[in-house]
Image 1 (tube, rainbow, N blue to C red):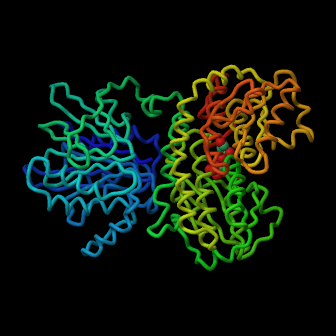
Image 2 (cartoon, rainbow, N blue to C red):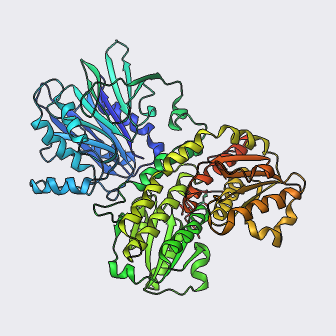
Length: 629
Ligand code: M6R
């Protein structure tokens, strides 16, 4: 997600901030900006510059119109969420009086209500972001806060108490010559504590340590719901949002700059796998409106048009296609509308039957996949309605769609999609519930109950991630396999396909996913002595004894010599007699289980590829975004 840098110290702040932003470029971004506080004494000014596109664009602006030199500065690289990637929406955002500058990472869920409140006070907004509201609120809170040493921090605490959602905020004020304040809830923020060669203290803020690792390795990690005030003379003061003192966790960073970008992980893929609890939570942020209605990001369709839909196609490629296969189960179950799922590269060539009452759901992490874009354009030519599930804000696919749900997973750097997939699956559930609600098939409280189950997913994914050591060991033992088969039924079938795809693309091992019931119709002939077969077992509570049938399938392959690796719910003892290895996952409602059961398959593929000595982040022959047909 967004990159954040702040600096208070003796060096030129702009130089330090720009260098920090460069080190955060790996996070992915679509605009950048900086602000510095200038002037001597209590009353100064803020100077800022921001520009859409890469840092080079911002640097060109700064070369044409240099900012005055300063020793307090903040900087931001933005990954667009609310509002497209434009100059206006780039951070920092200034208050209406120009006295406060704010940068932000995260999503402020209640920004719409706060924006209305500011507008009623006569404030004109200059961007479409959720962030700008904080600049205006902070300026007002500062004016109302009692004069004193921690006035700015008190203002920040007052604002944070009103915010809902996830945020890291860093702010500077024209009247504060020595102080920067920052806050965090659900989004990361680290403080770097250093000194220059002559022993002068200096302080850094970063969304991760890569922002300041060139200057210091001494870091302080802020806890949840905390505000930090950094003052040139008084150093760091940390409190919670009510003002009670808090102690930040001190640690020494022992990574080099490259490791810092990957958060200490060996591969971006591992980092992105680990980010899934946060990414899934962000996909769900702000989805329930005031009256229990589901909220997408953009809807340019009327309720009547949505009610008229009598057929859904889900169209996507690769991993996103697998998310689409899961969508079919959820959308049909909740809406009773027939759903067809199709790979985008095939869709338009077979002349599908489309009209105004067809909804085509396109799924794309990048928003630029050419096959998916062409399918979308074909659907629109045939007058179908198009809803996009997408991660990259401002990309072509959401721009050309009638409705959009962004996954808010943050940039995915590794070619193999991980958090992209799990957040797409969650987004598909939201689309299913949205359609059911619009068509009057689900009451608000029914939707709220399922959303509660969805909100439990991040903790369940985190639980799975904590138990991955035996899976890694298993991965190392599978590194010499020639063929690995994946089986699943019901929603576990697309999970089996996804597990096989991950293994193919990363480890270059022949892998295939099958619907477990299809095995006896041919593929069972592939099983030889020792062939690893990974079986994703549905919940024992799933309908029509799907579970029992999969347990029988495990017995069938084992009887033919397979080495069986079984992913099963905690407490499912039926699988134990037939499993050579059991990977446990927490109990999860049947339809939602793919978000949890996919995670061990991601870890397994990554470990096998790493053991075989391959580049996990950049597998051979593949590109992250496939912009050719
Ligand atoms: O950006 P998209 O979601 O449209 O990309 C679709 C596929 O190219 C992508 O999911 C691909 O299959 C991944 N490399 C799988 O890990």
